[in-house]
Image 1 (cartoon, rainbow, N blue to C red):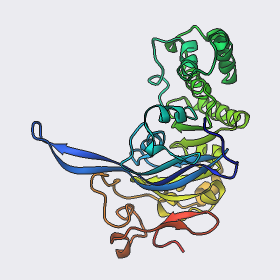
Image 2: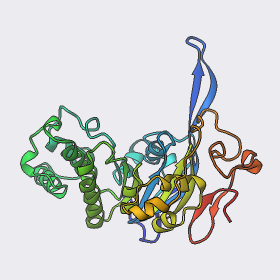
Image 3: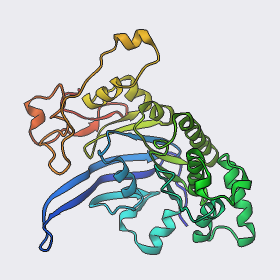
Length: 332
């Protein structure tokens, strides 16, 4: 059994994480014609009890990063250390035992639940797999988990199609916390829900984090939600993290041009401020991860790009002070 580390020790550390997908051409005699660099050299850590928000445009590699951390997707290179253990070197039963400490809540509550299983079986299945509850205590534990996520224990015999989207996501969260994990990857857990339900699920996850001492990697598009739930925020672009900082430091003083453009698109509920602030409109499309540009990945759309940005090597991702990491040539 893995013993928890002291609170100030990083629960999770990612070093040079890469996930590349080969592209083949031909029907009979296939040959590799390229490589999609979905995740390309990430370095970060998550401390015990904190929430790291991961944001960026669709296709930038956020979900692939979450799957690679959990070893649901085998990394091409790099290391993932969880509670001091290198997950990339584990296989079989050893990995399965450590995986009990790591769970995920997927984006789509309609696809992530087995339609042939009742709510009680869905929540109770992890208990059976890991042998955590004796048979005579399983029902009580399932009812307790349903209550924790705001569902009536009387709903245990219903099937997923009998629940609303928000209720299904509560079921998915109950399943995730059933095995008493330390770390949960929320892969856009509110993106498929109605706006009226998103705040409820976000608040539920925060309440459970306090009650169960959980650590989150929270992947999302909505920058307002990320600011609400996160302690630190990482911004991804084309497979790389371009800025990583404490929540208030990043939102109050964004330093990378891409982060500045993202935040300029967030509505502010103050007409006077909204009229005065500058809106940054990025030109062009995100380059293909199959053929990223030389130098800085963002140089094809950056309003500040110069010749140095278009040349190798790419800008160094380094601490610019007080734990504010930025990968940009023009940040002091």
